Image 1 (cartoon, rainbow, N blue to C red):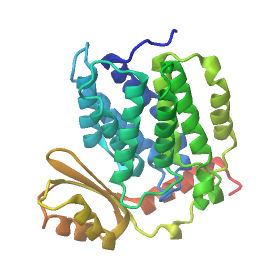
Image 2 (image 1 turned 180 degrees about the vertical axis):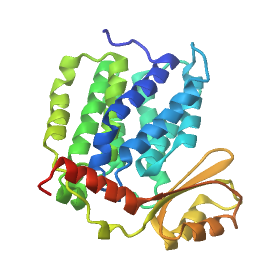
Image 3 (image 1 turned 90 degrees about the vertical axis):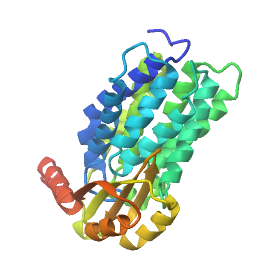
Image 4 (image 1 turned 45 degrees about the horizontal axis):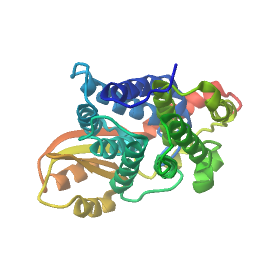
Length: 325
């Protein structure tokens, strides 16, 4: 298959559909290696659910679809569907990326690189205490490499996508160097690995020569074969519940709200669209948080997952596969 000459709306749509398929195939593996920030074993599922909601939004529009319309649909689905730490970060990356594309009819490699940069910026801004060695690092390294490559007037899609795939893979392989917990547990960051899988799906849509990808794919395959997954110490889980709240936009800044939330937990992420904000928080007091948030504005939706239970299930799965533990 030849590399496409220009990216149109139909390509953006297909890139998301193929990303959903790729993450679905790998979600169990991603769940197994999920140890940061909490070993609750749901990174793969959360990324899959996030992308699935975007596909639902895209399916509401018949082909042909413009770049701008596809971008708007992706951004809307990303906000609604954002689930969990990595899902929220991925949704913000896609929302920032798509905001840059909303007025585009077709894309050049340079415009695509700028959109990646906007996505990285929005992803970092969504996290109250961003940590290197996560999906954030992989996203940033992709954006940095893309803009470096796209600065050349001779850059084509083939060059751009091979470079960003390589950048994401290298950043993911280096995540244990940033986070000692990953090195201790013998894994890479699950969210970063999921981002690599998404980019792999994008490359398939673009039509990149597989021979050019072989060295990179070898690194990924070797990683999957040699990763040493270990059971989690449940005593390391400081906050029991992974919560999400969707509320009407209050007459307060998200920064003010995020500061208030710090006393109730961690892994705080706040995202917003025109009418609503969505909050992700790990806490031991979900009902207290709900009461506090409702002082700002009506809360439309609450989700609460017991991470101790999820981590226990992850441990059972690992020990059943590795009886020596």
